[in-house]
Length: 109
Image (cartoon, rainbow, N blue to C red):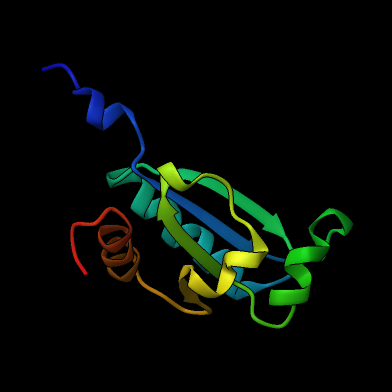
């Protein structure tokens, strides 16, 4: 069986906002890895404490981990649009991630 083009393209973009020495962030990465194994997505990670991520630190310094889930067609994350983002924060399950992916892909509202 050959994979279809649809399966070769990732419909969702998931961005993880994290920081060093954060056990919830470690758990979030594992949960995201488990989801990726069954439903691949485009992944980006920002350590909010790094100088180059200052624009995200201002938003999420005390809230990590935070996950933004969006359609791949919307491109890179922008802090100006963070209020509109489909988000999960702190503790979440693989099932919650998949449900938010469905929303981002327009499969569920």
